Length: 143
Picture (cartoon, rainbow, N blue to C red):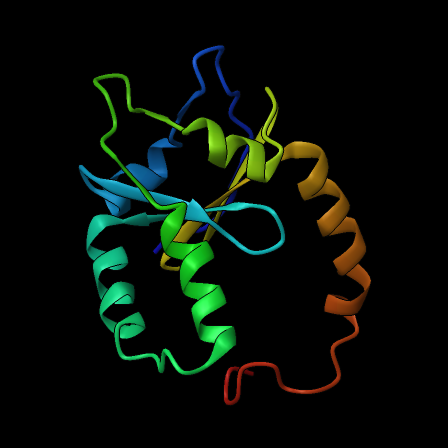
């Protein structure tokens, strides 16, 4: 399970070192793709395959489904960490997420997310109050 938040740097070649606590969960191979809210999602190859199997069952007659599939899958890039545990973020994905030198990598259960640090801070600040004041159950049976 991927948890926690880290603040690595993007190097001049578009590479980022994965936080050590994420490496075991992400294994030897990962898939990076467009996430929502202009971040990138990082899945282990195994988790991405599980998601892909579920996606294949989605009805292509739905425009929303087609739009989602196109954005999610067309940006997907299989990456293998190098000997220093760096992965390369392809230029189109860096542009999509507005990635610059300062990043935030956060674990979100079965996947990680890579954010532009300023975008993450804006997102977190904008959602802290609503999170603290949740009055209805978001995930049934959790609390």
